[in-house]
Length: 171
Figure 1: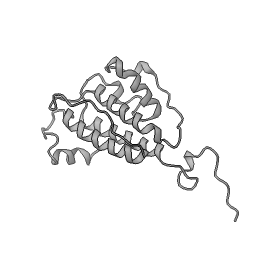
Figure 2: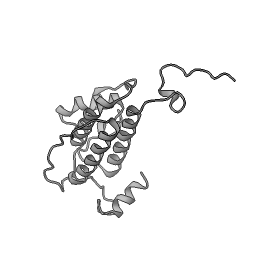
Figure 3: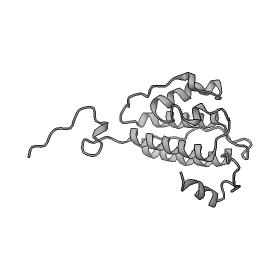
């Protein structure tokens, strides 16, 4: 995260104003979601495009509800390519605050599957806008979980993902 913010500022995606909160615009988020959709298709080996909503008011900050909905669309696209089913994370729906009613169910599913933090700011924050730091962390968590679920675990390199213990070697 320490590297991401200066990199994003250096690229000119976010204005560098000391002390001012930096929020992700809808246009910036749209570019990130498009790249994530490409990664989802490659990692999950699925065809077709993700049907994101058309970006309206691109300079306006993106809301947490819009981010959760976009992640849900990516999750639904990737789900047929999952190679294992994880243990579901326990999640208390009462923790959800400030999200649209239509998105609360999507947030619950994403949190249970581990694609968003169950007590992270994307779910529990009271502000509707998404800061650069929160957005970057949520993108990283989503892609990390996608990598977990779309590769075939091996007993040698991913023993914690195996259901049965690996066979013991004879010396």
